[in-house]
Amino acid sequence: MSTFNYSLGRSLATLVAGTLFGFGLAWSTMIQPEVILGFLRFQDFGLLLVMAGAIAVVLITYQLVPRFMGRPVFDRSFQTHPSAWNRNTLLGSALFGMGWGLCGVCPGPAIAGLGAGNWDLLWVLGGIALGALAQGLRAE
Image (cartoon, rainbow, N blue to C red; front, side, top):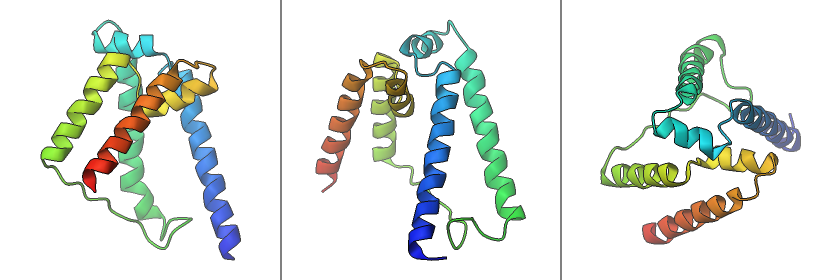
C-alpha cells in the first residue's frame, strides 16, 4: 500500500471515529454543561452510565482486539502507553477537574457542542487552548 493511501486510510479512520465519538457525546447529552453540572452536584447520574459504558468498551477492546488481530489495521504493532504518576500528573488532573467543575465542560464535548451550535463553548475552548499553551511554555 502506498504511503498516500496509508495516510488517507488513517485520516478517514480518524474522521469516522471522531464522528462516532461526537455523535455519542451529543446523543448522551454530554455536550450540555447543565447535564455535567447536574452530575457533579449529585442530581443526575445519567453521566455515570455513559462513563461506565465507555470504560467497559475500552477495557474489552484493549484486552480482546490484540488477541484476535495479528496487528492493527494502520500500524505495524500494538503499542502500550505507560503512564507516569508524579506531582505534575496530580497537579494537572486537579486543575483539569477544577476547570471541568467550574464550567461543566470537558474538551471533547466542548468541540462536539460546537457542532450542535452552542457557540458559547468557544470561550471554554479558548481557555483550554490558553491552558495548553501555558503548560507548553512552562515545560520548555
